[in-house]
Image 1 (cartoon, rainbow, N blue to C red):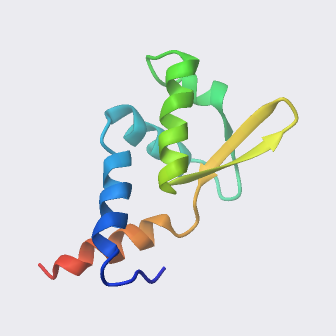
Image 2 (cartoon, rainbow, N blue to C red; image 1 turned 90 degrees about the vertical axis):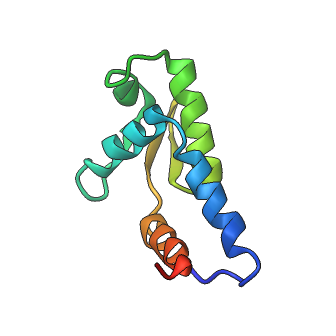
Amino acid sequence: MEQKEENWQERLAQLTKALGHPHRIKIIEILADLPDDNQCIVGSIVEQLPVSQSTVSQHLKVLKEAGWIKGRIDGPRVCYCLEDDVFTEYRTLFDQFNI
């Protein structure tokens, strides 16, 4: 995903800030370990973290707003998966540092 020159820092900060909690990184890890085209419901994530469902939901909201994950309503539940190109975008933005 191409970023305007003046906005790449803001986008990188947004993505990085969303990763600023160990539980959010664990959620990304859980979703990354799913088989291709598979999605995870909140209950499955809650079972793997030592926090309440409401806390997991808040972490999911932050990750979704930043663009790391997407959610799909499936009846009474929401299923989550990683955004397809977010890791490529993150690497591309980070590479702007030229280090």
